[in-house]
Structures are given as C-alpha cells and as structure tokens.
Length: 120
Image 1: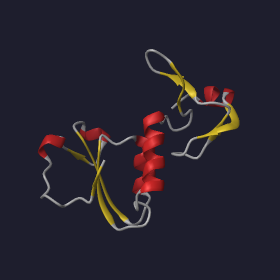
Image 2: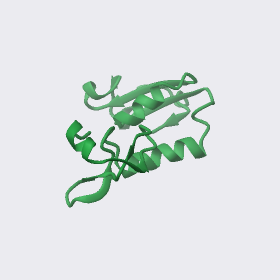
Image 3: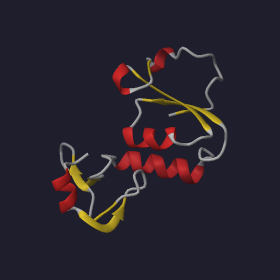
Image 4: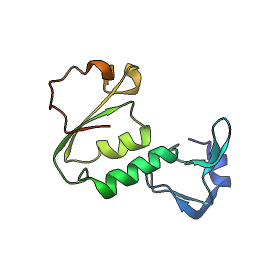
C-alpha cells in the first residue's frame, strides 16, 4: 500500500482495482526489476492478486455457494473481501502466525481430507 501522498498523485479513473474497487490514473510501479502498472496504490494488490480475484468472481460460485475455504498465505486485500462473504467458512493459514488465523505448513494440513471445498 502506498502512502496517502503517493495515492493522491495517482488519483484518477483510468484503471480500477477489482480487489478494493478503487480507481486511479494508473497503477503504481513495483518490484525488482520495476514493473510499471503493477501495484494498486490503495490495497497493494499486484497483477496476480487482481487476476485471482477476477477469476474467483467470474468463474467460481465463491460469492454464493456455502463453501469451506482454506486460504494459505493470504493476500490482505483478498482476505478482507472473502472474510466478508457470509456464505463462506473462511480460514487463513500461514507459517507466520501473525499473518493468518492459524499457523500451518501446507505440507501438513491438520484437517481431515475433504474438510475444505476450496484451497487457495
């Protein structure tokens, strides 16, 4: 996420972030090497996060179906939006317990087979 002054410099409506629904003149440069138009100035989402969100909304029943979702290494913007969906049983997991609901190694998921309908 960019500082408020940087976000102000990018204000406009040429691009819209599907994750946070904010509009900007352009997305910010991010990465090494730098990629122009890579990062949302508001929520910090990158190209892959925005693509994942669009895919989930357009191609899956995640907005409406009662699903149990395990989100590993959750992207903050996407986690906020998924957690708000009332139809989901939503759990985040990460090796770093500060970044998620539970500390978990994806190689050793401590839930029975079939417990989750979706694993991100």
